[in-house]
Amino acid sequence: MKPNFDWKNLSFDYIKTNSNIRYQFSKGVWGEMRKYTSDHIDMHMAATCLHYGQECFEGLKAFKGKDGKVRIFRLNENAKRMNDSAREIFMPEIPKEIFKEAVINAVKLNQEFVPPYESGASLYIRPLLIGTGPRVGLNPADEYMFIVFVNPVGPYFKNGFKPISLLIDRDRDRAAPLGVGHVKVGGNYAASFQSMEKAHKNGYDSVLFLDPKEKKYIDECGPANFFAIKEKTYITPESKSILPSITNKSLMTLAEDMGLKVERRKIELRELEEFDEVGACGTAAVIGPVGRIVDEKFGKTYQYCHDGNPGTISTELYNRFRAIQYGDESDKFDWVTVIE
Ligand SMILES: *Cc1c(COP(=O)(O)O)cnc(C)c1O
Image 1 (cartoon, rainbow, N blue to C red):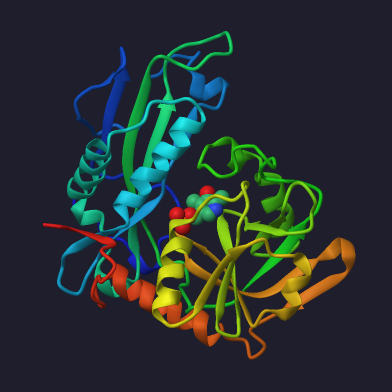
Image 2 (cartoon, helix red, strand yellow):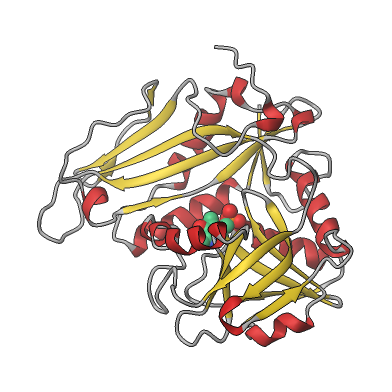
């Protein structure tokens, strides 16, 4: 099949590709890699992923460069984080070689779905680990499945890199103070749907969560991390309920490389008044420059991007980040896996 998409206008919707990769875990060991063309799974109705939330996932991307080569961004970091999630909800870890083999094969088998360089689009890669063994009593499963599928996605900013708005939700938390907010498990996302919907219904792009214990500190921007720039410092919150974003980690490295100081610490809400630039970061958009944060309950609005454009430091970070992903800038931090 030779797909002929309008690459630039693809959204973040599911698209069927050639094949996906699966591994099964049973009797304490991971089996062989299998390729599937079907995008359905046949599963026991008492599988623990359906009842007790034994599910975790990852999200990473592959990019086609000017040279025609396909580059996968930060594969090893995603492999590590998936195992952090697996351990937290009592699922077996995936050996790093299996994770790598699965992702690389999923990309290779669907090469024609990697968007061309000029489109600014990319191939989203979704690894998924689920408990498939049946349980009625509250216990972890004894069988698991690891799946990797890919999905072409359009550029996040179709009309250029533009400021977004955030609504502070004081009525709900996405994660508990000592819960599972720091790992990428399914339940956290269902728990954020109400807040996201409230933000969208009221005309905001996303939601800003405060710390679940005191509502005094900044936590996360929906499914993205928060960062701010104050003079020559890159500041990002530290909290047990935040998912450690690999984009954020990479931005911290780039910020240091650009001569900025990097601080990971609690950020009080009132500090929002002191920041020069604010951004949301994650795999989907790299950076969503924040133009406005509204705390409706307290009748307060924080404004950034006063001239309508993202700040200079956020813009430089964004441009350098994308340049490394597409292979336009040298991979000096060893972030990229080139598919030969
Ligand atoms: C996936 C995710 C992020 C972003 O992480 P990246 O590794 O940068 O894609 C941030 N917050 C939450 C809650 C997430 O699930």
